Each structure stands twice: as structure tokens, then as C-alpha cells.
Image (cartoon, rainbow, N blue to C red; front, top):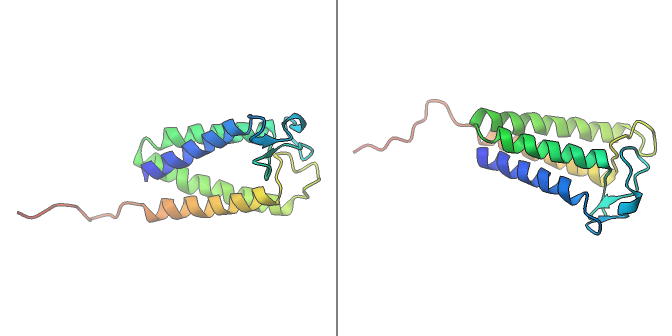
Length: 139
């Protein structure tokens, strides 16, 4: 579980860094700090802003730090997955061109957030150690 949480953290950190690299982020000059009017897109697909990239960086650092313990890894995977599912719902509810879309989010972001939320929760639950099971070998 700790390895998986660490991998998710590293990917979030990488995505946050890539969001600040022109070329990997298209229309980089159109990036705003926040808001739906940011024209920058990571890989030409996912709408990003400075705030969006900072959130990815912070989420990545949190993942790497929490992955250091089993309980932290579980919190990151299940709690982080829940946060991403809430963000997915938020993206479905807010109008893409409205002021409430401050992150910013587009359709690709919304469905990526759904997939991340489901995957993180699934890993957090599937990789939980089973109680009462030991790995002793009899002689």
C-alpha cells in the first residue's frame, strides 16, 4: 500500500511540475492564476492554471510524506480518492464558463478525477492488510 501511495504521490508531483513547462502545457502564455478563463492545457487536454498546478504539487508532496507509514498511505489513498470524487462531482455541477469554476476544470479533468478517485479508493481498500493473518512458515 505504501508503494502505491508513493507512486500516486510521485505522479501528482510530476503532473504539477509538467503543468509549468511550456510545450508540455499548450497555450502556456494563456495560463491564469485561477479561473475558468485559463487557456493553458496540460498535454493539450487537461485545462490547468497556476492554482491547479500548485494543488497537484501539494497533493504529490502529501502523498510522498503519507506513504512513509501504512496508516498514512491508507489515509492518502482512501481520503485522497474521496477528495477526487468530490472534485469530480463539483466539476459536473459547476458551469465550465462560470465563476464557480475557479480551479479550472474541463470535461477531460472531470473524468480523470473520477478515474483517480475510484482507483485510489480501490487500491486503498484492496491493499489493506488482513487482520489475524500471519506469514509464518511451519518447520
